[in-house]
Length: 296
Image (cartoon, rainbow, N blue to C red; front, side, top):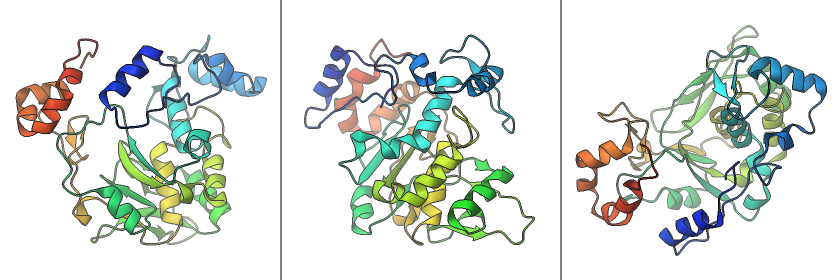
């Protein structure tokens, strides 16, 4: 998925690197050109004024936005991808033929061939989600409890990973308890799209994103994959490592989100010994990794 369209040459170049796949580069929103105005056309004047108050004028994808309840400032483009991944992605036409989705952030890169196939385990056990890391971030906004209760008629304040590697929801202890809801790490996971497309989950995801207001970072895409997984069938949200799956995906200097490595940039890690450990990757990926068009 992309907001800014790729050239035909760029698509063909990527397809040539993965010739045995069916590659689609899909626009994630209403504009074939990535024009922000096309995303704003259905907003009311009140909504536009609120957005300008948060992000400044004139609006552009790279305006940085403040938001009540958030101590992180992020640009409008980042907020859109968070909203898209939290809700719109599960209704997108391009994914309708598919039951499972393997998500990889564009800066989440492999470091080894996977010895065990997580997709095989996912399908065999008909899981809702499998993930490489938990927790990563948390939501403590009191509105989260209200949104969960409104949709699911249950009071859940915590997401917990037990010793056996199953994610589950812990009930609020009383009417006053505020949520402390930790997230599945968003850089990589496998999701069962049939689960996330259920009416109850789409209702929650709508309420938690555009039901509040557009272009929010407050309701993160990580929260968007975590809540439906907990509120659906118990025992169907599995951690990789506890189930003998080690992928060692490089993301922000971490491997599978576990601890900080020596190098935060993948190319530096690759140059300083990473490529020596992965022969298949070296043969396949060197040309890409050292492409002069890449800055990191």
